[in-house]
Length: 133
Image (tube, rainbow, N blue to C red):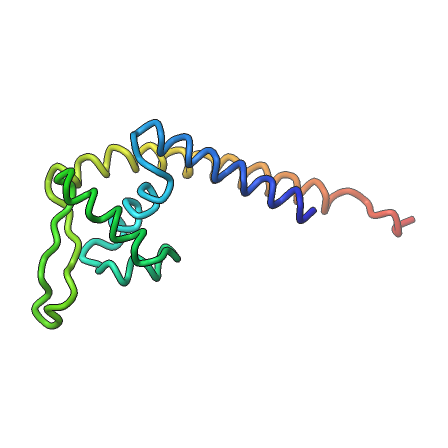
């Protein structure tokens, strides 16, 4: 069961990697983009903690997003050593377009699979167990 579950997780990650490539991003860039979208005004340090990624990886992706004009780094008033990550208008539009497809597919799959799971559980609970006689 554990091997099957791990295999499913690998397939799941592969589907996200394929989608990321289709929108000219890496899987890591897609993950960071999604995290920024959910936690705008976060810092690179916060992204490292949320995404479980090393600082140099996050820094490289952030530099590329800045170069592409998707985000800007804003000096924080309370801690000038850290910078808040904010989308530019172009970046917010691009991220929204990319992530909308991900979110829609996740929501559709979750609803479909939850309904299937509930029906399977109900059916299993209604069936007489082997110990009943």
